Structure formats: C-alpha cells, structure tokens
Image 1 (cartoon, rainbow, N blue to C red):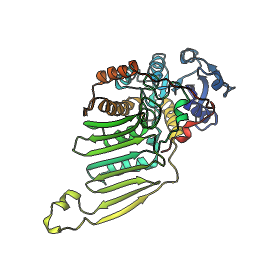
Image 2 (cartoon, rainbow, N blue to C red):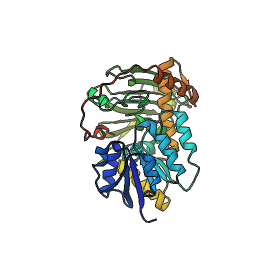
Image 3 (tube, rainbow, N blue to C red):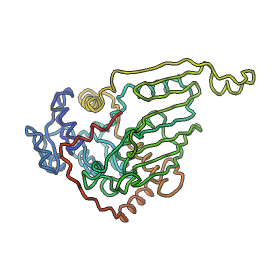
Image 4 (cartoon, rainbow, N blue to C red):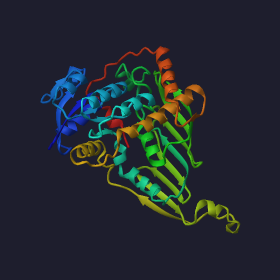
Length: 383
C-alpha cells in the first residue's frame, strides 16, 4: 500500500478533516469516501463518493481506513463495525460516552495489524509537550498540586440549539466534560496519571437552557497525595485558561501563550523543614518558554495515523488511552449526581445505569434554531 484510502463519517467536525485531506495537508492520505445523513453536507465535496450511512461506506470496498466524527453515541457502533470489517480506525473525541461503552470498543480491537487511534490533537502541542518533558524529566520534582481553570469555552444559546441531539443526555451524553473538555481531561491523565478519587460539583443548565452540565468544579486526589482542582465552564466570558503545577522543585504556570517555570534551588520539603533557614523562601531561577504555534494539531494526528499504517510509526494517541478521559468525565458527573467521592477505577456499570436514568427522566424540549450548516464551531476550540 502506497497510500491510505480513508472515509470520513460525520461531516460536522469531520468536514474540517475532509478538507485538510483534500488540500493535501496529510502526506499519503487520500479521501476516498464520505458519509453523512445530510445530503447538503455531502454536496460540499462533489468529487468524493458519498454515502448516507457509515455501514454503506464500510461495505463499499473503497476505503482502507475510517475517520469517525459522528455524534458521540455513534462512535462505538461505527468503530466496532469498522474494526470487524478489517479497517484501520481513527475516532474523534470522546471515544465513547461512558466507560463501559469505551471498553466494548477497545475490546473489539482484536487484530494487531489494524491501527486504532484517537484524535487527541493537543498531544502534539509544543506547550504541553514541554510541560510533560519538565515533569517526566524530573525538573519539577514530585507533583504536589495541580490547578487547571478552563473556562474559555464560552458558548451561546444558539450553539446548543443548532442540533437537536446537542446538550442532551440521549443525544450527546453530557455537556462541557464530554464535548469541550475531553482534550483537557486527556492531557490531565497524560501529564499526571489517573487519580485515586474525584469529588465534583456541577451546574446542569446553569447558564443555558440545557439539561447537561455547563459548569463543573472537581477536586482530584492522586496516588502520591497530590491534589488538584479542575474547573470548566461554557458560561463565562471572558474565560480563563490557566494551568498551574506545583512540584517539589518549583512551579509551572501555563497561561497567555507562555510557560513560566520558577525552579527552587533547594527542594521545597527539605527547605521548609530546615530550622536554620528562618522565614526565608527558597531561592529560585525563572525560565520562560514560548513557541511560534501550537504544533500540527489535527493534521499531525492524521499524519501519525497514516504513518502508523504505512510505516509502523508509534501512535501519538492510541484509542485505548481514550478510555481514561471518558472515565474522568464520568466520575465527575457521577459525583455531582450522587454527592459521593468516586474512587478509581470507577464502577462503569453503575455509571451506565445512572446515565440511563437521566435519559429516561429527561424532560428537555429543544427548539432547533436556524443556524447555517456552514457554521464552523471547530474554530472556537482553542488550545
């Protein structure tokens, strides 16, 4: 195989991916087919074979791989069907709505020759790569505390009204945690590992006429005793994006397109326990890191996926790792619903039942507003 023939299903965000492929931004990747239930979206790509359903496209024999960019609940059945048909699979975030479904999808990947990846494009961002390097290289020392405020996801009422499935338990399975924050939650575990316990409070329709969460504050406990606070919202403007990490050897702050690392010349714990130091603070040195851009992002993930198929390159974001961000989101919602602290690994079956209860008792009646199909909400997704 010299080129990978890929089909894209779901032409919302998938339309952006399709256009990047058509524009030649991904070497050795060819857009061979598209699928969407909306004929208008198919018409945007007149030179590409279109299908009304993913099943038709999978059975067509025209593709070697599939990129799944459908509404969330379809990720698992489409992914399982594609893997069973012998296709390589690249799935948008989140890989599933809940952990039990994510486990079913991962379990369907039984053929080691098939490449199975997730679109966690923030793993290609040089800012997060640098932070990970400082943590893993030991420069920061053992992590003590993490604070992450991600409230720059402001959304209008028109956004939620743009689709009948959006911001409903039955259609999307969640709100800010399942839609806007999977990347942040993926990075949270990618940088610090999974926690041992999460306690969260959430506002369900706090700022919008929706039934799902649009405001979340979570308290996180890690294995080594480190703690964290994660705050997310789609109802604040102007929002904040600030990641602060305190370690034994200093503090990292990522905000306003720069990383500031203040490094302690003496370890925090040892210094604080030395009586001869009096009331002085540890001496520090400061390093500032900036980058010209945020890396290859979606194009980089598609290139890595293609190179993994053709050349055996290691994946930046294996789909199996997508279960972790789903589990974090689920645990936060379960805690908010029940008032309990949720231990990890969380009870996937219990969460699935709680979600079904939310769907069964839903009383939401959405009035879909007239929003042009050309509206590109992807531009509002910032690093």
